[in-house]
Length: 398
Ligand code: PMT
Image 1 (cartoon, rainbow, N blue to C red):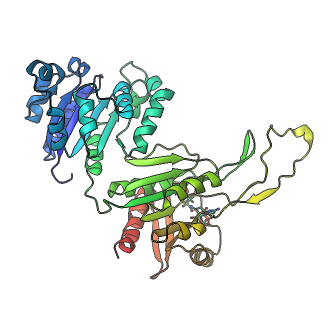
Image 2: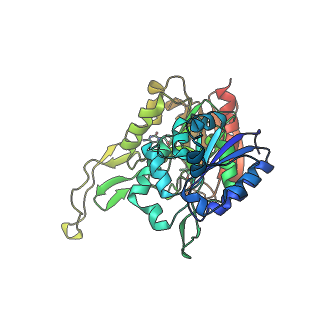
Image 3: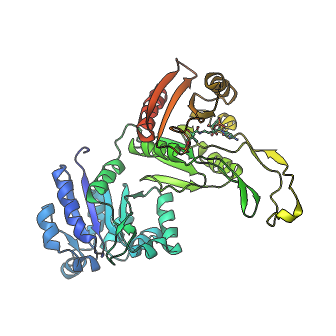
């Protein structure tokens, strides 16, 4: 895995707590030191002795700290010791307390005193996960850059199958390693756009395109894996945010432009993988357009070109555009590279059904302001994202 880390593992009270023992074992096998902190209810699900034996360290638990009076400053000492704080399982209650900044036990006061990366592995029934209150807390935590491992779909404690199952210990260990950073892009900020934009025609219809967001999400995942602080501005898509990514959801091109401009100045690298609609209906109808009204004439207005306007907002950032082309790939890509002031233009052929829009794979030619074009043959978007970041990183560190 990664270099040896000091991991503080918070365990809250849910049935998935039994998997935390396996997580401790895995982390220790990977050469990491682990100290566990149990909430009051967690001791009903996993015994302190199990964790003590597996971790080889004394376990922080409420009753013990209260009885010995040693809890006074222990949360400060523990917070200073850990390099990563991971809460697995994280119940809906603990997520709420972390989001609200409550400090009413050892784990939450430690989280408040802790300055490093926080990883949470939520585990709960799917109804609880979907609840608006839970989702708002999740959103707050994501915005703060908290790393999420899962949850995933699968069998739940209730016997039902749904979203809310805790990620497997291997996945949590992987996210802990990524969160600990030390990656080549640590200290850098990467802004990625993904997905389509939807431009409303009336309350039920929109102008849009077939972008699934997969290319942009793969790029954001790669940036986060390399340790960058990663901001993902996503159009309307059905994808879960990659671990550790700060996600901002938008619908229209103008909303996307606002979100991108808000964060562009912080970014060292901006990758515009979104398929932004060039046009929008000048005026969206307030009520559904009815067939009986006859064929509607929809007047279009031009949307802002976000990429073309970026150099003025982020003069020092490395700018990457994508070009979705059905013909004259090279000529169109070179023109866009110039006209939009980008450093890289990644061209893909969107007339093919085996790559680009919606597909798991892509094949691109990367045109550069400096240097010859680079052809990257068809491969999964995650692998392509890694190859693209090798090119972008070389430019960033020049
Ligand atoms: O999402 P997937 O299903 O995974 O598909 C991936 C993809 C095909 C959408 C992706 O690889 C891709 O090509 N994205 C760019 C699509 C696009 O809008 O291309 P374009 O040639 O129209 O635009 C060129 C560049 O200008 C793009 O970086 C685009 O984000 C940007 N642009 C375009 C219009 C506009 N109004 N503002 C912009 O910033």
